Image (cartoon, rainbow, N blue to C red; front, side):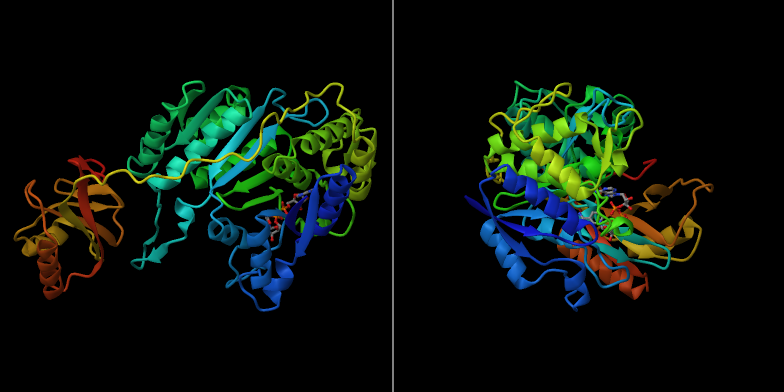
Length: 476
Ligand code: NAD
């Protein structure tokens, strides 16, 4: 018996959880349940995190969490509980299988069977945002080597455990050479350890276009957080419906399983919601905890129910649906089919797919880090970069102004008058190719304050083992 934590959530959450639990119980899943309250009621009781300490304790004690969708109340002050849980529990891998059920569920892609593995903690979702000038706000995109290694290894281990043949990587490293460049580089390094698995890399734009057009060429796809967020919804939708997909959020200690859709308030309490997304989440949970027999039994019963044309309203298709049923009745139909196998739809084998370990990150030896200069960001309301340069050149000394960019585009020296400039200027100071010390930077900043230059931030320019660790200006 394995004790798990469950939360019935908001909106359609309780209905789809009741249907899912009735199926788990009828299938003799070796589970005990501990229920917690999270979401809207908790938020509205004045707890802006949406979760109590007791609820955290239950999840951390049981380590496995089956969660219905929750409603995040509108208006400021309420933190997204999903994002909080993923990060607080270290749930670094988000896994979303997107498979077709043609011809029983409508799709333009009858051969699609793709798993999206999304990094779940980093990237722009670090949520570090600042307004820097009247006109400019920024969001920090943080990509880390341990984060990349963990998610990429997870994708390869997943492929091995689930008998998948290929892992693709999507990034935009032609533009973001440092951040996405690191993700891609780590992908290549780790791919070399899994020679039994085919690999390729796609720039996210063309990769997504091909995924939407010919998804059958993709097997497992791994990508950073934001791309994964967008692409996994598209993938689920084109495989049939977002309403049918489950997902897992895996950490080294805890794991959370859910439907990918939300709490659907307009149809709450009407007994019409499709419980499949959460049920698929529960099936992923069963494979994760090693109850593969139960996972296959439930999945086969679900496939048979779909083949029989017993459908909830959202997947109704004339000529295919034999009976439109409610949430509860759909659950009962799946229970009736427990022990049966599908006739037309391919069975999914969860094989040896049990919880697998991704090796702990080992920090490599530090590389030689050298300071080459500094980017000083200035709030300046003028329009002519030559004028700004004439002020900034007054600060020259040990370090000298070498470039000014506006929104990343070089505007000095030799900028174009056509380039639109906002009030946020990146001004690069270097020392003619020689190393720079923090003292040089402190002196530069002191002079800037004396000249009343409005500095909003600085970024040090480092190289690592002689390799430049910062971007050039566009046009440089
Ligand atoms: P949603 O996914 O809840 O619903 C969009 C529409 O899709 C619904 O109105 C409904 O017509 C349909 N739908 C969704 N699930 C269905 C199902 N199981 N069966 C049949 N039809 C279904 O998206 P939304 O309306 O943008 O969000 C509603 C709330 O859910 C918001 O408060 C949002 O913050 C929250 N949300 C929670 C989660 C989560 O807890 N994991 C995820 C997404 C959204």
